[in-house]
Image (tube, rainbow, N blue to C red):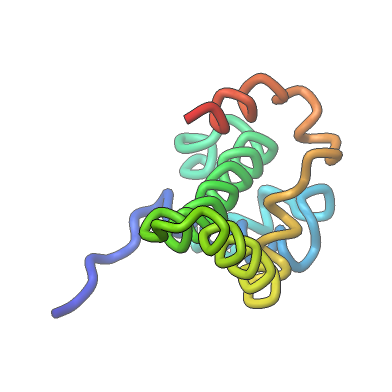
Length: 126
């Protein structure tokens, strides 16, 4: 069974994530993202108002991925201490497996994150 083709939005996000992880948000231009994704600037701006909004959206998605990774270990555990131990081990395992994704997801002090404190809080609320 074949996977459905990536949407334009998905291609932009995949290209941006790779560029952001290697060069950083500040050192990546919209033009570079568009080239890597094979899309026009118009397509980029149809999906995202600016690079910082794309970076924020991706940061929040990576944070949800991380917490999902931890919750998948914690939720089935019936004993509290065993759950805590497994979750801490899972946190280190995620960081070992995906160091760049973890670091990018922890971009709280980045200039492009400073104006989005409330959105980050809102995303963390659930």
